[in-house]
Amino acid sequence: MKTTKISICLPTCNRPELLVESLTSCLAQTHENIEILIGDDSSDHRTQALIDSTYLHESRVIYVRNEPALGQADNIASLFDRATGDKILLIHDDDALKTDCIERLLSAWDLHPDLDIAFGDQYQMNDHGVVDIEASKKLNTDYHRTDAVVGLQTDPGRTGLVQMMPNNGWLANADLVKKISYRKQYGIGCEYVFGAQICIAAAQVFYLKEYVSYYRKTDVSMSKTTARSTTAAAVLAYDFLKSLKLDKKLEPARELALKRIVPIVVSVYARNHQPALALGIALSHLYAYDYGLNKRLYFHLMLVLKGLTATGTLKSSTQNG
Image (cartoon, rainbow, N blue to C red):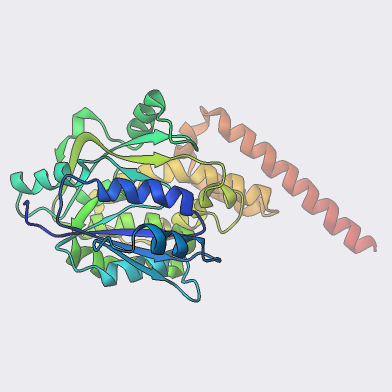
């Protein structure tokens, strides 16, 4: 696999300082046959100036500034389209790769030549790039990356539905990545949709129980800034999951995914003046609250009641007026 060409797709937007760290980790890969495709959606020229001044003579870095900006999904999709490698790896501009990430993930193909996707564990780091080991262990456990499931996955589709496969730092066959791609109709839920769809389409998915990448948890990430909006990733993922047609064997995976997502969606709707909708979702997915044993249910019911009361008051005021 040493001769395998890898296309590293690196979308960026207004974060040249972080991009340097991510790009440095890509250039340091022990697997040398790589191209690094950068799609820049920035609103200014700082990133372009950085590339021109620092990486002008680095032939492995192929930079494009999107004018106008494409948005998250189309930016990533355009990177996939430009990729000329046999396999594709996606990494976001605020995250990074271990130096042997590609080498270790490629080793899975030595064991299973017909493999479609390989991924491993992620370190969690803070804004300053400091790794939190305990948080990293919890992150991977929370997303079902445990010793018990190392190797080929029995149900590849489940791997994507329950978000076991991370949203970046994975390695996959280029033809499959391009076939599934990112789609802007899912908004910022496009990450979840892509992960689910590519694993459902894959014949073989491999989980390597090794740290291969770094995930940066920041206070200004897209997911945090939209977390309480009805366009939040969780809401869009919920809509996708509910409409998705699946084989019966994947229904338990759908339920497990909804168990994580439903409480978030209920909270979002309750806080956005749609208490009746929030209540309906909560009551139709009581398993997400352990059938009433989870205190979170009662907190959300309180939010719903507060919302219903406010709605009733508003209607009364309108009628009286």
